[in-house]
Length: 265
Image 1 (cartoon, rainbow, N blue to C red):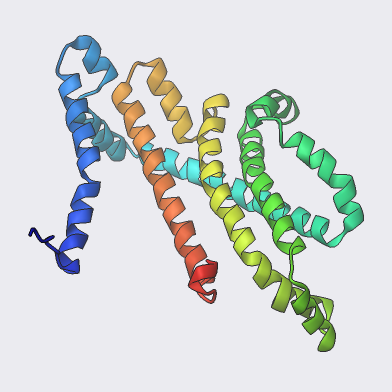
Image 2: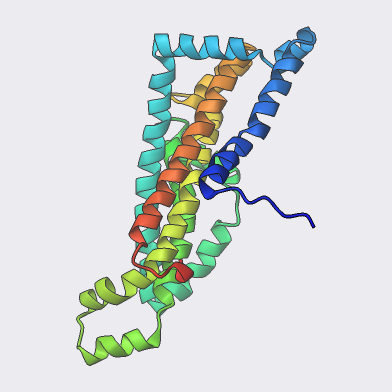
């Protein structure tokens, strides 16, 4: 009778880590193989050595750091403005039935329009400079935070309302002690949705409005000059920064919700 071999836990964990790298390494090997076939393949699949050389050159000239900071700065400003406005409007709609009845139809209609569909109007109003980019980025943060803040502050359990009435909580104390903790998971979900969407929109806005510092602008110039190695460096930078941002926001959410039971998280 055959028996299953059970590996110790300290051995399984490294195995899983190695397994997670198998597909990326295979893709890199396939990419390098494709780049060595002919001139057409070498253009579409830039040799990894060329990408590395372009990365080093962009670091030496400072172009990568300057444009990365330009993109991060716009993303941060757009997230702050859009997030703050989204939190405020979501809370206002949750606390005021009249405001909700008046604003909800307009908000739901506008958010059905893709951000790219609003670009001509935004360009007409704000031009094609930094203000237009930040406005588009702010909208990317605004929508999910309005929805999730409203849902979080609207759905509260009646037993906690009775507790607030029993102890005669003021409006601010009720908000701080009862409604905000209940709404926090919803709000953090909105932030988790807003951050990657904001970062994607940042690059898209730079591609649409090719003015000022930013990774999107560098990508446009690289495409125009057929510099695929530079284009790939910028694309990889955008991807890696997006992964880091998402991981940081998830870690923050986990930390802020550490008081919740595991089954409720």
